[in-house]
View 1 (tube, one colour):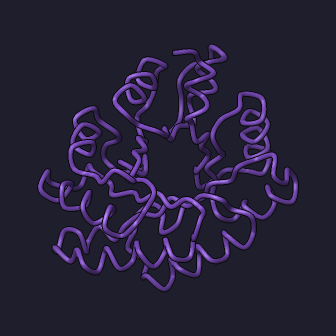
View 2 (cartoon, rainbow, N blue to C red):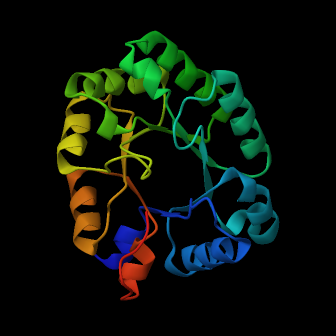
Length: 221
């Protein structure tokens, strides 16, 4: 697999709380140069990126990030604004407390409502696998599928662990045919990147991929 093929599946990511506009511009310029799938950025930068780069950049943002426990109404407001300002893809964090409490119908309703807002635009659902049991992960595969989301995503990169080979293999067994997989968190080498793609991930969320391809030291999400 070529580096170009790998980068075409990368959501080039900058989600640090202290990210400056200069950081975001660097991210966008790298995304344009290396033809990544998208830039994944804080909601506060969506409008400015869209105004600066127009349709040259595919913008992904995060909703309910990184803890997931904001209300459904709050997430809907976040998503509505992001979509209006030029976002094409949304990575939402589920309410992990609801998952732990077994309130799967409520979690499904939240995902379904955000997918309705997204329409034809992409919704990725972060279930934060590091906090879940295997039984909960399997249940969430069904919830994400039944809610009509486009992707199930392993991690925020801000939890106690990131993507693992085992979780991606578990997803593959239990998601529906219309759901794709995004791995994120801890993808720190080109070998990791290639491994997750070969396992069946259609997207990889990382800040490291472009730097790795440029021969830089691995740092970040």
